[in-house]
Length: 160
Image (tube, rainbow, N blue to C red; front, side, top):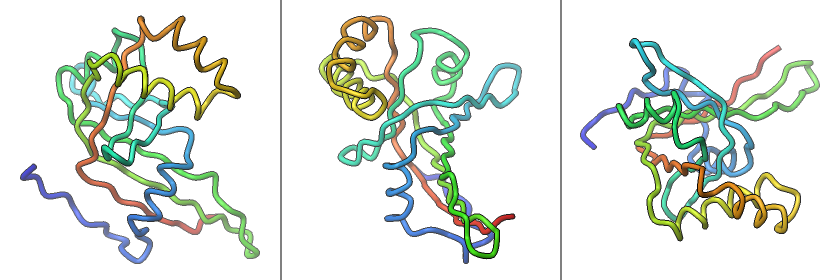
């Protein structure tokens, strides 16, 4: 890509890439922002899994709807995720967040779709049996979307 992304204004709060990857691996929810209808942004929470071997973030959704229509119109998306924060002795919380800019596309290879669905299931379901049952019952009506990371930044804030 030829795009140049802005640097962080509060660079002293910037996290290292390894910290960003830790948060990306440990976090359970993200807000996905797309270019929605009528020129409005559209942000929606998603469950996701990070695939380090492809540098992708993947999530599932219905095969049709506002989110998928927006992605099909404009594949550029933004994902934001954050930690719950850790209470410090001074009464403030240290909260970390990661912002990802990337290109979203639907995964079409059936074996890869199932592999991603398994990884999502292992992250969110209590056991492998439930994951297998859910994939068997729902994968045929589920879209799997992969976001290839173009740019990622992280930040730690100290807030009351």
